[in-house]
Image 1 (cartoon, rainbow over the protein chains, first blue to last red):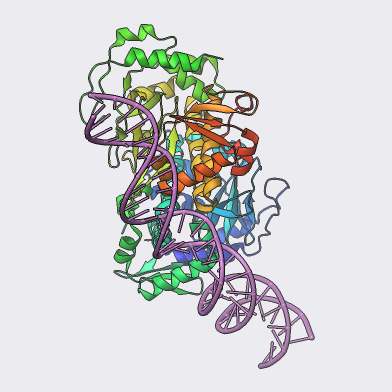
Image 2 (cartoon, protein in one colour; image 1 turned 90 degrees about the vertical axis):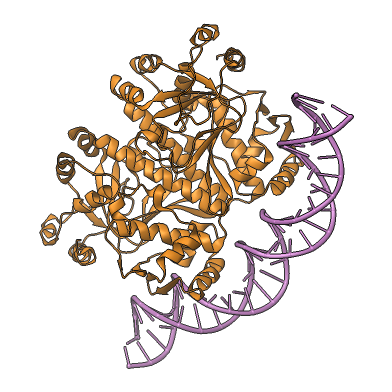
Length: 287
Length: 287
DNA sequence: CGCCTAGTTGACCAGGTTCAACAACGGTGG
DNA sequence: CCACCGTTGTTGAACCTGGTCAACTAGGCG
């Protein structure tokens, strides 16, 4: 297993000088300091490969083709929108470290977060085939993202046999996650709903090798405020707060500054009614 | 515009003798009475072509390639599952007439409907790339469905240039619909939530030419019970009933046996906060 | 005619929202 | 180093949307 936390931290330090860009699609981005890349313990595209291989085995040629993708890492400011509703993106974003979240704004002004995105995710891969975005994607603090022009990504897909199917599958797994979220928000009471979100994120992080933990407990970074967790679960932030207290009182989790520790993983899964099948993870990536 | 209602009715009559199959994936299906097909006013695959062209223009070669697809129409019994959780489908279903719905069963026993499917939809296209289904798909009364073996469908995709992208796009539009449903169920109060479902279905039916109506009013078949509408909206059937009464009282809709009439389409859209962008329909198909 | 399903109604209750105030924390500037 | 400030988290009380339970009605069909 790769020392993921360390290498990502190194990675971020090497990028600390990168300027964020205001509106990614509308103005010219400042050039990237390529020289700094040599500091990295691994090239940026390894994150993408690790994510894809968490769900889909790749052939050596496919891996090589992805490695040939030129990536241009940039630090994104906190809560900076990567994509906005109505945008016509000309790039696909790849999250190299940190998180992003996807949300819709309703006519009432309320927001609904419809998915979280972790390192290796390509949250707007769909823009390859759906030109106008119907939602927003925002980065959380510390996120580092690369933008790949559509033309380059299309060239990648045609370069290696079967890669189109690989990325198609990736978007289909996203669909499965959305379906699970519809059920989560539509049917589960608050404690199960929030527990389910924890279970999903933990499982996905673990499949990327980003979790520390023992037999039953797991600790991971949690950059999500209670406000955002409310927008993801369809609950008010006040009720999220009380529900978290209940989960803590039942000794299922503890929360630290920006981290969560799952104290009893089997019991949390049980309380959430969580079954990881919908994530289509390669069995060896699930614990 | 094709006289869709009439032709589909004719179509259904011609299939009335077809036996339903119990478990589509596990036992041999009875052979189809091919001779009856000559009665149809249009071949079955025209429904599929019309659906795709509601979102994505096709080249003549693509249309020809789809027309060459051998379709095997079957009547499905009411509430018959087409796909079950855990199945490994070897076929893709195409809905030729009637509706289907996709649902998940939670550990509590509650059900959440995550999408409705209309004529031309391929509700388990994803099974091409995600072998094991994480949900169920059921047909509503009167549904007629064709099953295409995966091998044949893959052959179709390679036969015509760009068809893979067309169907990938189709699954991405499904994703957009799921996202909208997450927001619908997560944030909208009951009246808006139900109105939004009506708006989506009406818009999709209209893009298929399946709606009768005047300037502001629209009438269409509505095979969904209040119980099912509750499972789709995350509300109890009792509350659905009361919410429908409210929508009727405000003269936005009327309900007849198995039909709904939208009395004031602009006002219903407004009440629902509905914006059809997420459906990615070709502009000429929206009214 | 009788049964079954879908729709309707009333009464009661609970989960979750809202509003408002306060506490804890990290970051900033003096 | 401390005072200040904005953000995030926490608490209490009142309120309300929507759930539950149970009974009843209205059609559709054999």
